Every structure is written in structure tokens, then in C-alpha cells.
Amino acid sequence: MPPLFPALAARSQRPALRFGDCTLSHAELAEAAGSVAVAIAGARRVAVWATPTLGTAVGVVGALLAGVPVVPVNPRSGARELAHIVADSAPTHVLAEPDDELPPALAALVRVTPSAGSRAGSGEEAADGEGAGEGPPVPGTFAEPSPESPALIVYTSGTTGPPKGAVLPHRAVTATLDALADAWQWTADDVLVHALPLFHVHGLILGVLGPLRRGGAVRHLGRFETEGVARELLSGATMLFGVPTMYHRIAEALPGDPALVKALAGARLLVSGSAALPVHDHRRITAATGRRVVERYGMTETLMNTSVRADGEARAGTVGVPLPGVELRLVDEAGAAIEAYDGESVGEIQVRGPNLFTEYLNRPDATADAFTDGWFRTGDMAIRDPDGYVRIVGRKATDLIKSGGYKIGAGEIENVLLEHPGVREAAVTGEPDADLGERIVAWIVPEHAETPPSAEELADHVAAQLAAHKRPRVVRYLDALPRNDMGKIMKRALPG
Image 1 (cartoon, one colour):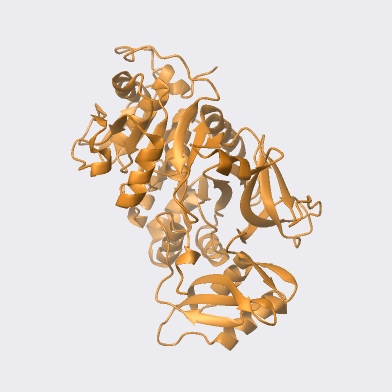
Image 2 (cartoon, one colour; image 1 turned 30 degrees about the horizontal axis):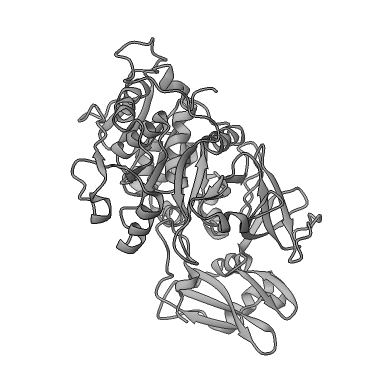
């Protein structure tokens, strides 16, 4: 089996990781990660206190080299959630930075501190070139893990119960990263900039392991700031990963920031994920920079399923087409496949392919319930355009509204509401109605709290863009919408 990180094996001298003023080449990363691999060799599993630091990245790579499954831990986890994750995954070791104060749930584990061995101060990168195998060998000798062996155990958000640990094999990681390389024309010459958390698929697998597998580099900002995005894109970075909240802030800043406009205009690829990017932010970014943001669609259990291709049309409101190796179908409530690519028929997305997880840890019942004849049931609802582009309209549990005999996706209504100049944020849900079955409710954060758009005005705005039956029947105003760490709106947390 080829190595997970060819540039590490080849001891490339090209830059690999930069966090703040600390930079490692692929050769230096191989040495630092190799030391971690030796320290945890034979461990059952290793928890990683996933702060946005160089040590986290080095520790995860070291565990992958040693074939020890990684359990990324959100440092902001509550005590009950963290206790559940540790008890369920039963790690023997924990990787953390030397100054991190770990909570009691992790205190009994063997603590290992990744040694970055980094150059600090100037932030200058290693010289270009592929290296010549110079320097000390990577400590230890490790066989390449089998494709089906667990690479990571990533815990879901737990919206319907305790978080479940999705076991992601090495096969899923490599399949997703190689499919994205094909879709995005991702090469060793690309330098990625982002500020995503490292306890999640987006920031860790795509945002750190992706560049390392290609032999390129990642520059992590630590925390998101538009100034940092502009600085890195103007100094050699070629790609930007973000979530909608970040791109919204970029869209807001563009009119008064010529440097940011120039930076985004010169980027090779702008990618948004983890939630839908509102159409109006797409349009504002394109109008200011001439560049379109690419969206992709994935889940913890499936990694990446679809994406707009770098050589395709970045159409606002869509997540593109299935990635190489991924089979995708829509099914109706009876479980029958929807064959029509008509841009109207709503069905649940089901997928199968090498990108899927193997199981929920210790939950054979939940694993069995998640699949139908080998197809993973995502719970996401979508339509397909005539050219095969997928449009997500929401979650089956919270975003599919059955009103007056119609099946309505909340996402398309939210996008239209966000186009209204008086709306800053919007969420759409359904609530019981004696006549309609469910009525459409719009939750609005107005642009100007003192003069919010009226319910009638918003209903007319939606009816003018979509079918009349999709207009909101009730409008409720909030100061802010509840969101999680990745910027997703938590509809279950909306006031009852």
C-alpha cells in the first residue's frame, strides 16, 4: 500500500505546516511525528486535545504513522460530553501541548507532548526543493496501516442523544483526499490557508491531512481574521477553506478592504463547507472579486460526497456532483429511488463508496440502522438539477416541511429570505398547523433591529421568488441565531 503521506516518506524539504511563527518542512514533520509514533506505539487509541496548534497536527500525523486510531477532542466540550467520549473510546494516551490544562476525564491517561522541533521567530519557510534524504531517519519502523484499519474516531454532534463515534478507516481518508485532488486539481504547489478547528473533519482531515497528502503546505491562522486571510493569500497561499460565517464576514469586509479584494481575486480556489453558503454572500463575493466560491458536501460518517469541480461551474446554492468513486441517489419516503433530475423532486440522499465509515463505535444497532442495502442514509434532503448538480434543501428531521400536501425544503426559503435587504440572518422551520399539517415559520435576525421587515413583506418577497405555498406563515424575530462551532444553525435550540 502506498504511504499516506508520500512527501514525508521522501523527506521533502518543502514547507508543510505553519502555525503562527512556527514552520515545519515535510522532512522536519516526519522526524517530529516519528517521535510521537515511537512514544505511542502499541497504544489502543490516543485522544488528541485538538487545539489549533502545530502540536495537534504533529500529534495526529504521528498517530497515523504508528497505526494508532486518533480520537480528536474538542477543548470546548462540556464535562458530560467529554466523559462520554473518553469512556466510549477508551484511549490509553492523550496528546496535548505542554501548557494545556487537561480536564479530569483525561487525567488518568498517559500524556504525550508532541515535540514540534520547529523554527520560530522569522516564520521563514524551508527552501524549495524535494530533499535528498538528508538528516536523521524517522524514529522507529512502522508498517503502513491496512486500508480498513481505523485512522480516526470522530464523534458526531449528538443532537438526538449522546455523541456517536464514527470509525473512519485509512481507506476513507485516502479516498476522500484523492477524490478532492481530482475535483479541485489540488497539487503539491498549492498552499492552503484556513482557521478551522482541528477536532472536526473539515479542519483536520481536509485542512491538514489534505495538504500533507498532496505534498503541499497549510498555513493555519489560529483564529479567523480577514486581515490574516488577505496577508496569506497575498504572500503565496493559493487556496482558502472556510465556513459560511467566515465567508459572510469576508463579504461584509470587502467593500472597504482593497487588499482583501485583491487577495481573493488572486486565489486559485475558494472553498466553503460544513453548512450552506447563502446565495447573497456568494453574489457579494463574486461581484467584488470576480471569483466564485466552490461548495462541497460531506458528513462525519461519509467524509466528502460531492463538490463543485475547479473546472466546473460554481453555481450558488449547489454542492456540485458526486466525487469520483462515490455513488449517490435520492429516495422517496417509501425508499424508492427518484430517477428524475428535474430540479423539483425532493428525496433523501443515500451514498455508498470507499469514503464511508465502517461503524459507530460500540453501537452495532446504530450502525445497522444507518444503512439500507449497503447505502448510507444521510438524513439530508436534496434535489438534482438536470445536469446532475445536487442542491441540499435541509435535514430530514428538521428541514423537510410538509405543508398543504407539498414537501418543502427549508434551505431554498432561507436563501430567498437572505436576499431581502432587511434580513441579516434567517432560519426556516415547520410547526404543527391544523389546516396545513405544518406551517412555515421564518426566524429572522433583521439588518436593523429598530425597523425590521414585516411578516407580510417577507411573505410577499418569498412568494415572488418561489411558489406561493413556500411563503412563511409566521415570522419570529431574534437578536441572533444559535450556531455551533462550525457555524451551523442549531434549529433545535430555537425558542419553543
